[in-house]
Amino acid sequence: MKRENNFDIIRLLLATVVVFFHVGHVSGAPLFEPLPRYFSGHLAVEGFFAISGFLIFASWERASSLGDYWIKRAARILPGYWLATALCLAIAFYYHSYHVGPFLLANLSFATFLHSSIPGVFPNNPMPVLNGALWTIKIEVMFYIAVPIIVWLCRRLHRDAVLWTLFALSIIYRIAMANHETLAVQLPGQLSFFMIGALIHYHLRWFEANGRWITLTAALMYVAHAITGWFILRPAAVATLTLAASLLLPTVKGPTRWGDFSYGTYVLHWPIIQIVVAAGLYAAHPWAALIVTLVAVALGAALSWFFVEKPSLAFAHSRRIKTPYPAVTPS
Image 1 (cartoon, rainbow, N blue to C red):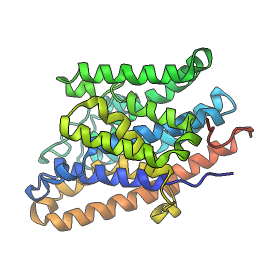
Image 2: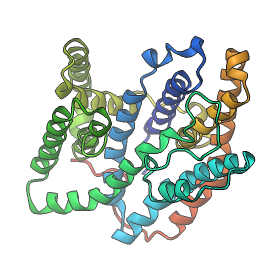
Image 3: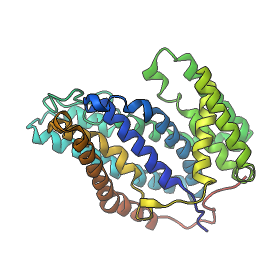
Image 4: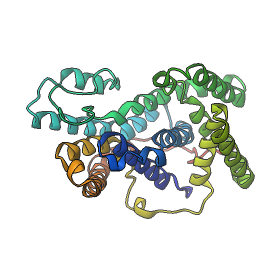
């Protein structure tokens, strides 16, 4: 029986936070420069990784084989990612810039940091990067690769000891790289959020039974983190609060009653912002530009879901071998 939850709406909210965060960073409009203070893209990404930790371990437990697991993971992430890459190539061709080989190779290998722009594209934009939001996708793919290995370790050693050890090592890495922000937020710096998602997955009944006190504790931890700046408090607090909202609150559907639009929102919003910037709308009419951006992102996400992501997931589902695994393995 399918478990009711708020994963879709929470992910859509997190993706929307990232949109506003990047409008503040990318648009060049002084009016929107304060947005990153109120819409934390870093916090949203950490929430995404916490949800991924829960859902990807659940996906592995449901899979009938390693091949089945990879089919489902590929169907979830690749079509939307390729669509975002295709949009960037279309923009480059519009600018009559055809030197796209390095950019395409970097994107197809998830190494977007190697070639984040194409010569001659968005030359007058404050930031000519074509899609700076895709840096998290390589981390997600690394998580996909890591999960079967982590589960293998869990089955041979003590499960919780393995998960908590990885959590602790991730925090140690993050603290050690505190003066190297770019490296700090890469893997394994994000693994601590992912591990809390895994732990809640494996202890779901306990989490549900004690949700009120766990959520209160997480909220106090986050307040303590905000006051002290101690990163050690952040992963458990952020991941727990994100999953509490996803699993313990009354179910809210909103626009997600028609589909899961979060991934399309995430992978398409940056180039859409850049197009609106290049059209000069953020410089001339920033509020109108913001409305155009949000409408275009919503339309792009809907088209991505209905014509790219959903058919791909349906195809992957048709290839699945039915198994007795439940949707969520409780503790």
